[in-house]
Figure 1 (tube, helix red, strand yellow):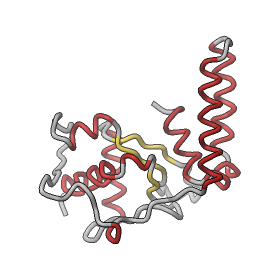
Figure 2 (figure 1 turned 60 degrees about the vertical axis):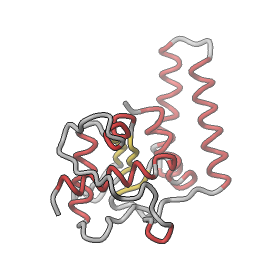
Figure 3 (figure 1 turned 90 degrees about the vertical axis):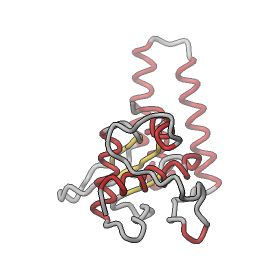
Length: 177
């Protein structure tokens, strides 16, 4: 399958799930597998290319295997949405099939990590904490130190275990870009 078609399918996939937050890819337990006809290698290469050209937001996870395996969380950004909706030309050849339905039937959807009620509550509390830090009567240095500590916490194994995809979702939403 042509790279431009794989990029288009991936971008459309993320567009259809844009309200779900960041979606896991790569070697993660809950990672989205490539659809039929697309190899894992091509699927992940498309993730890297769409990120490189600014169509998606990508938060990579450290590869502890030493084998250069790509893993992380992706989310379509405003630029990617504009490309899918036809308002902007993509900066890289991307074949988006306009005839395909905008929604995918449940049985055909790739599994997406779900969060528990407790994980959602903790994630919401952390988002309130970030907002409070941003609004606090502190110097920028003090705010940055507090947010740096929070980012370090969110990148820990413990946070990943407690929050699941929520930890990386918060990191992508508030600490990248």
